[in-house]
Length: 261
Image (cartoon, rainbow, N blue to C red; front, side, top):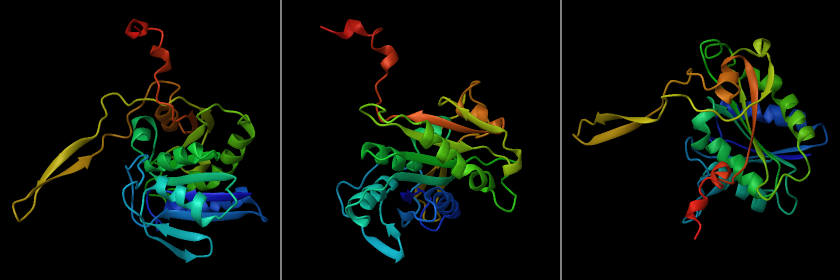
């Protein structure tokens, strides 16, 4: 198996080392793991691509490259440049530092990398490690992902049908905010929404008098509805959420028929 890995936390991020270990287990002794990751942190960039400017790409080691672009850029560079004429069998994106459950999924560069992989016709999985009081201060806060990641990937690949539609499936996997030994299992979960949790801004004034704002996140320990991702994560479960790049609100098509003329 030939696996391409990327992330949005950057080439030096500890979660990428965790992902490389997971990918190595999945690829097996005869497989290959290729890394094309952003040279600098790209958190929150979603599925953006560097359409109006070129990006520099540098080889750092055997099968290891850094690109001055987004995770989706890195996937494009990996498929169409770095790996040559042979496509990867699988794309893994992560392991993100912090969860990409609920509304976070909409902003995530980690998911953006997996989404681009799916649009290119490659099976793709985004992986994120939820942080909380039970795991944030342990020796390896990515322990749950490292311990359970390879098995989760294999189970997803085994369960996925050959034909998943015009917009190929990709998967959003979130590991719960607990040590590996406290993971209770895996849940197939819908994307949820944390009630009342939104991004906001925090203003700051520089010594020069110039005004700036920081983007500020919300409380990540707020539960979503039962049976959805963040609720299952906070209950100690790995969540697997199948996703598509199709943004159509299919449930509203019949109810909005009056718009037809």
